[in-house]
Length: 126
Image 1 (cartoon, one colour):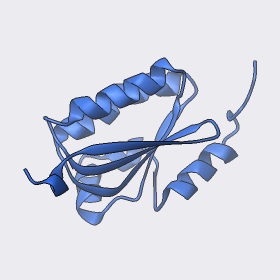
Image 2 (cartoon, rainbow, N blue to C red; image 1 turned 180 degrees about the horizontal axis):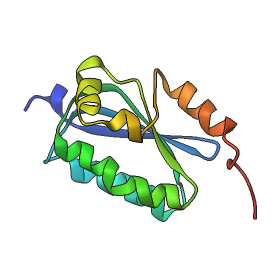
Image 3 (cartoon, rainbow, N blue to C red; image 1 turned 135 degrees about the horizontal axis):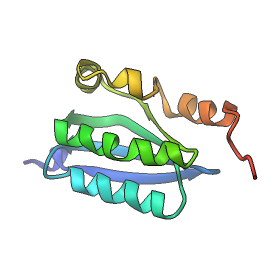
């Protein structure tokens, strides 16, 4: 595996939203890194997550499984995972498995952030 294929996650916070920028290859070997990153956010009560795929070159079924593993828990806590910036080859894998029915997919992270900002449950205090 070359350095360009190496999987990386970069975090950025914007108000109450976490943005994860993925790059490289997300497969069975690297999926645990993403799993740990999302689990860490959930443990901190950070349940509004945007994932940017702009620099992700490849995703396997193990990578897709990470999103499925957390989505129900995150939504039960009033949050969501929104996906953005997918290259055509990555989107085709998501599309083939019906993920656009389960996850909102945006052209860029700004649109995904705005969707959180426009949702009725954002910043509600009980």
